[in-house]
Amino acid sequence: MCIRKAAKPLVFIAIFVFLVFFINGCDNAGSFLSSGGAYRLNVRVNGIPLDECSFVILGDKINPYFEEPISDDPDVTALMIFLKNTRGDITGQKVLYSLDGEAEDDETVIRVKSLDDTLPSFPMPENMSFGQYTMVSQVMSGRDVLQKTEKTFFYLGNTVFSFESINTHLPGVTENPQLIPTGTVIMLEAKVNFDSRLDPYIVWYNGRKKISEGKFSDTANLLFWKVPEQSGFFSISAEIFPADGYVNLAGYQKEISLIVSSKTVDMHLVSEDIPQLLHWYIFDGSLNDSKLNNSKLNDTKPVNSAERSLKLFSGNNQWMSANGIYGLAAGYNSAIALPKVAVSSNGNETWQTLFRFKPINEGIIFSVQFGSSSDVSMNLKREGQYLVLTLSSPIDTVSQVLRIPEQNSFLTAGVNFSILQGLLSAKINIMGDSVEQGELAAEPIRVETELKDDFQIFLGDMAADESSNQNRTLLTALWDEFAVYNTPPMEVIAAQVRRY
Picture: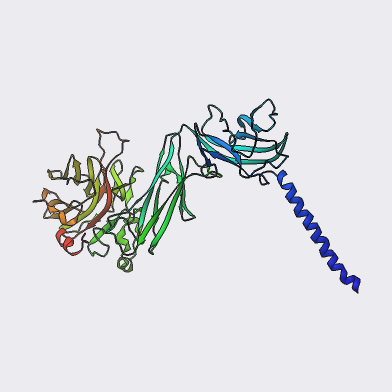
């Protein structure tokens, strides 16, 4: 009985002794393992560890070093450094930082007194192509390799590549531009400076969570992000790489802090609960009709949101910003179409457009086509420092001219047009940057015509200009907000428009 009871302790003692020798054996063998052993190797580029920024440009000083002293290790006699391209081929020569100076014919020897200090600069190969490389470091004992470490970097050469800033833009005017209203879709823009040989790759983070990534050519430098519904401080950062395939690379990084507040509000020109409102677009990173936000509308009848969305006629439209506000730019060869609006059977109606925009270039800002043909139309055009409103019919063409206010910001304006007893009339009102600043034009312009069926509004120019290059894109206006309703303008402005 006693002998049997003593067997278990003996077994435990034997296992314990085995584990002790096994663990000690692993510790002693660690210096002979590759890529994860006892020697901590790193590389500095102009004094900055390669792990913090993996880009090398022409003329950079590259210095390998041991993070911990190794002078007490008699086995280490040298450090071998060489480069490999993405195909695995060695680029340039092997460089041996050696204590004794022994080397083979294909190696460049740099004699050092100690491997503990920061080592002399690694000589980069001449005429090295830009691209991704791997720096291989081998801890040597004579000709034996004790440990191998690999670090990836991107060689830029004389290629221009820098990360300037992250800018924040709101989809409209707010009471305080430093505070972002809760639930707002903001546009974040990564400003990157680079030359044509590169197509930078951008990764966006909210805190540590990756929220978007892509190529600059696919407009990944722009991020539309809906801020949380609660107030607070939120962090957004971006990491930029010269190209896709950034595994094991550390890119250029920048971070911003956003202040989100429920106590500040956006200041749109209208709101979705206006009964006479037909369409309303606030260009908040989407083409959707904001009128659909009205729950009353959705409760009364099913609505096809796709039919009410804006339609782009080319890929030439650009999301742009100005004065801290972003919007969608349109113009020649880059028109945006609103849904068609039906005309009543008796042909007597009044409509109003109210919009905020920033003129960019001369040309047609928006146009209206009445019926299925282009015989009857209205367009608003910029000519120099003037806005020209023109009505055209097979019988006559008339225009009205107003001077653009001298300011470098978004303008608020409106066009009132109606059909009454065979006359199409229109009048423009330029309100500057505030609804309260405007004055209506003295008299409307009129042409004789008969309207049937419907009309359609286009932001930009749908008509072909035979004298211009058909492949040319000319952006004429940056749109922040556009509303269409069928109530006389002064009644709507007095009753419904939010005041600044």
